[in-house]
Image (cartoon, rainbow, N blue to C red; front, top):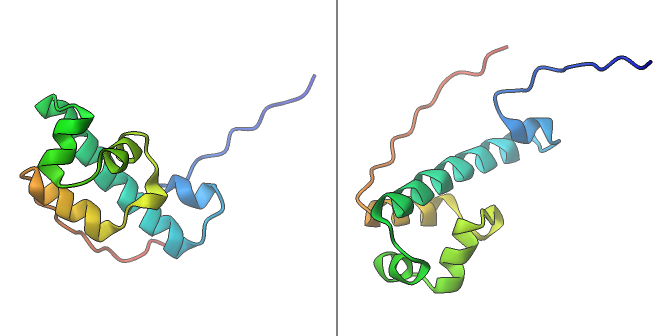
Length: 98
């Protein structure tokens, strides 16, 4: 019988997936921004079309957002969209833990 080993995950899942530290940080930030935006869309009960109108984006872009297609969105665009739905983004910068 084989023995299973459980490994503690890093705070950033993207590191565990093999991304460089810089890319992992960027992906984590974008994923958090996307989730916050998706939550606001759900909170307002907007359809894809309504969201596209409010955010001044195409329906295809909003569909990509709701499907989590992270590669299609920069940090800048996600912050701008969050601002358009009345959210403020705050940044916390911390020293690396050894």
